[in-house]
Amino acid sequence: MPESMFVSLVRRPSLWLTALVQMFRLAPNGWWRRAPFLPVPDERYLQFRMETQYGDAMHRPEGNDVVTYLSWCRAHRRELRSRRRDELSRSRAGA
Image 1 (cartoon, rainbow, N blue to C red):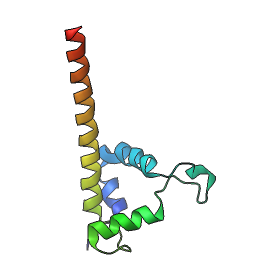
Image 2 (image 1 turned 60 degrees about the vertical axis):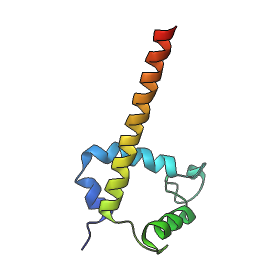
Image 3 (image 1 turned 180 degrees about the vertical axis):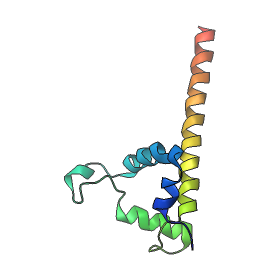
């Protein structure tokens, strides 16, 4: 039986901040004005993602897949920060 998304995240505290950031990034604008008043992604977006990932819009996300996605998000964010620092260093060196 696949590990649940919650259990997978609880076991990986290094991804907690990334999960929180992604939760707010994927939440629709004005999420606080609509019930359930939580920053959760739009249901249509989630169905689309499940359809493209698993071939079934009603499939629940699997723990390992969520961990892989969050790990990628964290690595991608770090890579972007590194590139910005490098570009800033080069621009200052050339000035």
